[in-house]
Structures are given as structure tokens and as C-alpha cells.
Amino acid sequence: MKVFLIGVDGQLGSDIDRYFSSRGVKVQGLIGLRQVDICDLEGTRKLIGESGPDLVINTAAYHNVDLCEDRMEEAFRVNAAGVKNLASICRDMDIPLMHFSTDFVFAGDKKTPYNEDDCPGPRSIYAISKLAGEKVVQYMLDKYYLVRFSGLYGHAGCTGKGNINFVKTMLRLAGEKKQVRVVDDQVLTPTSTKDAAEKLFELVQAGKYGLYHMTNTGECSWYEFARQIFSLSGKDVDIKPITSRELGARAIRPAYSVLDNANLRRAGIPDMRHWKEALRDYLLSS
Image 1: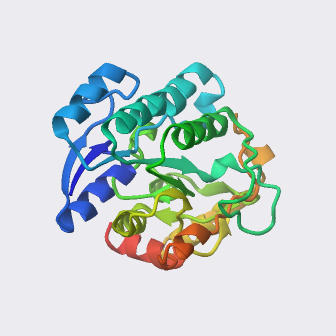
Image 2: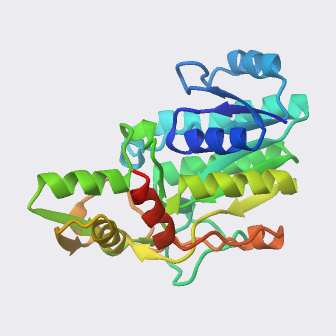
């Protein structure tokens, strides 16, 4: 099997490359923008055509949530129009596309986990643009894996945010500040990109196309996540819970965006391990 991977240097892409390659998959990984710009239809078509893959995996996205509020056109150019280009290429070549979305497509007014049948209600430009990308994939393709994540973190860090993630940020702040303030009214499921890559491989092996939620199990607030990070890393930190209003972020985040991996279970793929166990392994290997 041959995979054309866009964003191989990113947080998720690097773990996909590592795990898929370890399972005998031939991965042609390209760095987003520097080597492939999904907004350039003909340039991207040429690269994918020359590669001749069995599957295209796209991790490229404009995902600075707050910046999207002021750069709407750029958010939609990458998260919707760029995705349309990939869908068009995959349709013409008759190969499946794997594309990723976010828990932020939901409004956050539920108190129980969202499943794939729940109606989205995005509350930010970022979330709207990601939902638009989802709809483009579903409209244009029959062969697709559309996967929503929540709270991703991995060793590579997010390239769109300066190669950082929440875990790395908390550990850095623990060494710089006397007190760390973290939001306690946004509940999610932190998800390891290492664990996600393994499940993505299982999904490809199953060959069952469709929309999937894919997260570690359990739930917590960002504040509870930070406390666990400090506890497992042995850091004595004065951590203060604050509200989203106190944080004053530009974009609205859902208050509750825990995802239920219902479609994965229907596909015969077991739930991922608890987020605390995944975090422990991440910190031990850092």
C-alpha cells in the first residue's frame, strides 16, 4: 500500500508516518506549503498523480482558532477550498481521501458525549471553516475517511502554532511562572496523536469509509488536564482555575465537546485507552 501524506512534519502527520511505515506502508510524506500547497489545484494534482498512491491523507489545516476570527478568507481558503481541491483530485483518480476535523464543530450545549449523528453547531470561524471542509468531502466523494479529533497533542507539536501543544506549554509555564491560570469550564478529551495514528491504521485496514470520532476515552477540563500533567511530571505548581470569560480568547470554544467513538465501535474497532494512561506514556517518552 502507498500513502501520499500531506503535512508529514506536523504533530499528527509525524506519528502517522512513523506508525504506518512500521506496518509496511510506503509513505510519501510532503511538508505542507514548503513542498505542497493544497490551495494550488494543478500543482497538487501533479504531485499526487506522479506519486500514484492508494490513499491520500491530509493533515494540512489553518487551525489558529483565534486568528481565524480576523482571517476568515484564509481559513476558508485552506480548510474548505483546499480540501475541495484534494477531493476533486481523489475523485478523478478514484482513490480515497482521509481528512481531519474537530470537536469544535459542535456548539457545546450537551452534557453527554457527541456522536457522529449529532447535529453540528459551530460557534467560531475556525469551526465553521472546518465544517465546510467536512461537507465538501461528503458532497464530492464516496470513498473517504473523515475523522474528528479532540485536544490533540504529540511529540512533534503543532506546526501551525510554533511546534507547541498544550502539554508542552504547561510544562514550559511551570518553569517560568509562579502561578499558572487554566480554563476550567471547557470539557473535552485530550487525545494522543500516537494513539490516533494506530487507530487510523486500523480504520484503513478495515476499509470502512465514513465519518468517525476518534479520541482517547474519559473526559476532563483543561484545568484538570493541566493538573494531571503537573502531577505525572512531578512538578509542584500553583495552578488556578479560571473561566473562559476571564481568559478573554478571541474565538468562542464549546463548553463541552467530548466525542463518542460510536462509529469506530460499529466498524469493529475497540475504544482507545483512557486519556490519563496515554498522557503518562507521552510524558515518560518525552
